[in-house]
Image 1 (cartoon, rainbow, N blue to C red):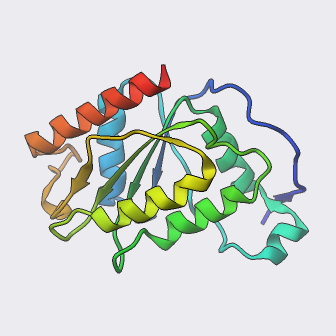
Image 2 (cartoon, rainbow, N blue to C red):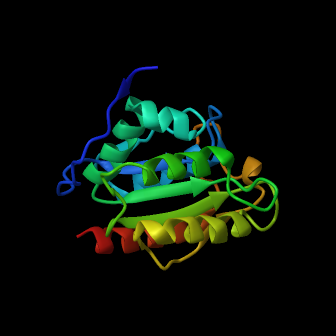
Length: 189
């Protein structure tokens, strides 16, 4: 694993594309599909962040911050806004997403501070990841992100929510998602 020593850099003004962070690493995950639909409705350039990071361990951090972590933190800093989609596992957010937040919190960049962030979830259950969203919002509090108030997008029974091309087939969900992206745009402008 390539690693770079800690940097004392501070986040520069956002100039990059909208960034999406999916709490699922699975190819074709409902949360990644939901992010893609959100990005389509937001408009403009979009980039998916890489959360495939080593498990956080102080020994790794002390040796040198992994390049993938520094790259993720810089991607967050460069984005005008961030959208995060989390599945719900055992009444909470995914370990992948929590691990990424733990790593980013250890960088000196502080990329989420003042950053507009929209939270959403897709889950197989009928609550659509509501508990995972509560936990995610709590985890984002120390980052001082500007979390968009709503509307809430919690996609339940997510396995039936997309067509073969990955497009949402529920008009009500698409309308909520469009409203959330409009709110995120207002926060980012």
